[in-house]
Amino acid sequence: MTNVGHRLTPIERKEIISRAASGESLTAIGLHFGVTRQAVRAVLRANGVAGRRTGKLTDAQRNEVVSRFVGGASLSRIAAEFGVTAPSVRGLLLRRGVEIQSVSHGLRHDAFDSFEPDTCYWLGFLFADGCVSYRAGHLPQISVGLAARDREHLVALRNYLGCQNSISPTSPTHGSCQFSVRSQRLADRLIELGRYQQTLDERLVASRDFWRGVVDGDGSLGIYQRPAPSTASLAQLRVVGRRHLLESFVAFLECEGIVGLSVRPHQSIFSVGTTCGPAERIAKLLYEDAGTALARKAEIAARMITRQCGRA
Image 1 (cartoon, rainbow, N blue to C red):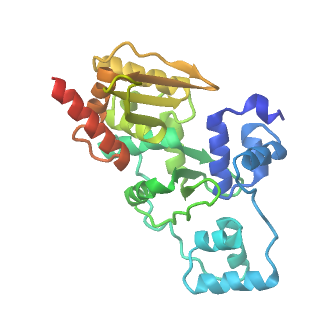
Image 2 (image 1 turned 45 degrees about the vertical axis):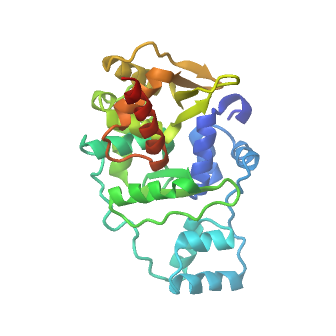
């Protein structure tokens, strides 16, 4: 085991928070990242996230949990109300003999098998903002968390996957909501295409939909006022992530005639970004006449495209 401060990157800390929110045990998370349970707990505390609670409910509360579920409340809502995890609520209900209908009914386990535009988009989004986690005795879990303002994007992902898995209520501590599914085939496909490897499938590298998903997941678009006394504004695009992912993004842009960008260290991760005309050209390349996109970033991209077209 190793000390958390010397090993974990910001991306890994983000994944730790996501895994803990989805119900994975601190021990399993620590084993995955090669750190101690205490180190995982320290990351959660530093980010205002409560650790997983077990065995905290009284007999009266357990009875109330059963009553609330039979009355129609979802696992995630009950978990939020009682300060425990959804998996612990599920375990209690199963021990009480309560039948739980699978919310994954209809889940498209082949959803990532093709390279259609929507498929590539969601792959890019999950490569940037999602994680695949493993826990003994359970199917692999694909999970993603977004700020409350982007909750509808999780609804869109859920609709694409064809299931009815719940989206958690907004956390009062870090303001995000979580969505996850369990599927061996979906997890294997993400790994196979390069989610945690040093190379990406070439079909993804060549897809503007994939890169729009990456930008929606871990990028930023903006039009900012230049410092005074200038009255002009400045378009900007920036993406953060792992080096190999961003190097592939730069290679994609070069194939599209957008050159001069480089991957730079940013704290313990990497970033690539640009401003003005190049940023507007990238926005046009990724978002113009696009299908699926995060609404608020698509709106900014549209403004950037208008600026670019106005100077053409």
